[in-house]
Amino acid sequence: MVLLAADGVAVEAVYEPADCGAEVTENAAGRVPVTVVAHGFTGSARRPHVRRAAAAFRRHGAVITFSFRGHGAS
Image 1: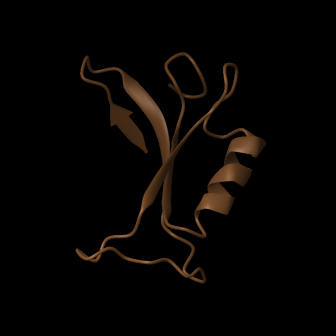
Image 2: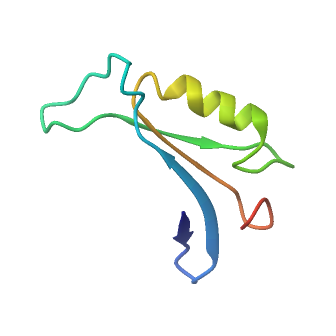
């Protein structure tokens, strides 16, 4: 997916819903938690270590990863 920054710059992002086999606790409004994972200095949203972190966090809720400007497909 692509997010647009306030100045119109496209930012690569990946949304992953919570793991359907996980025990995710919804809040009072029926929403699940969301974790945002940011990569390191030379990384991108699609690097293997970022994908592994996203997979681990999916056990607790949805995950959004993104690539900073000038990285990955951003």
